[in-house]
Length: 480
Image 1 (tube, rainbow, N blue to C red):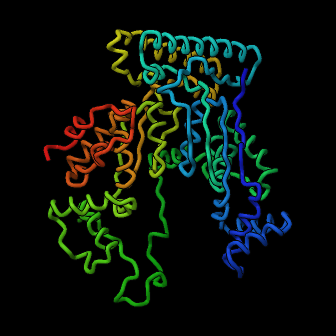
Image 2 (image 1 turned 180 degrees about the vertical axis):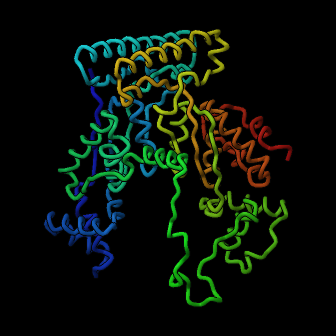
């Protein structure tokens, strides 16, 4: 059977010289080019010694000057989901909306333990995987779109994707795969170890090690268990702040916390815009008039650098989004997203049912897929299948809760893409409902948010356009 693999396709050949030059430039005379050329002339061992000394001091940003192109081949979609949550990287994946995954195959766990028992588990697992892929094929033959048929695919189905990442983030990813959250999943840990070994020759200055993410969820649970038991503790750090922390001039604060509780998001953005424009008394000027707010925000939105919007944050709770939908959400990098451990939160009784399934009269057949998978999962669990292998039985249509925080600039991008008529319908439904809630709460700001054709007047989809620009614009105009 084909095995999962990860390969370094390309990296900076002179990476040690580039990183060493970055380390030297802060304290060395000469121009950027001169320092780089001198670093190229140095022996590689001298460059490596310098780099590791810099890294031991915590100055790891020098690693960001070199990058790697990675290819993940025939890995499970679970691996894909794990990797794309690292936001300081670029990804291009094979689309489940347009590509038939019926013949992509699936990952087969090792099924450790007693040989006879593991053989029985393997046979049952393989039989059920074949059943799931047959159901996927059947849905396609019944005219169900690929983007809806995919919900019956298990998280073992194979995916292929590219990733481009700087060396600092690469170090973090591999550490997480081998020693952090990924270590309990053999496939992820093995891929991480493979990448680490490939990197030993290419970038020998990288020092891999343990991750601080180990067992975090277990510690969190134990803390709340102690709280329930009535344990008490006193934190000396809450007793007071040393006087040395305070700026000596008691009449002047060097820093203030901006009390945003009294300002609306619109007012915050307007004040930030005034500050950026160099206006005096920007904190005192009255900015409560809705028309003025809207004109200022409209002007901010017309520029490429919308830092004023980034002073406003929105935290959204997606009550139940499919595992497939999480992939769409996690691709937006400028956010703080909290995704639960699937194996602990997923229930085979909570899943998404596409309208195309209902219209085709296939709901009973579709729901039977989830029922059968639940039955097989329980059977395999009783036979001794480990949680790290059970992950492959989860179906793409299972729903999970997700929490995320985005600033208003990233939210502008998210809503512009995900409220588009061509966006995948599930993530579009979530995006439109989020926009509806935001418009009710902060109408001036979010009346300017919507799909590209609404906010810019142009459709970026070209020949793939829905052809309903006027209708869509009218829908989002809100009677203006």
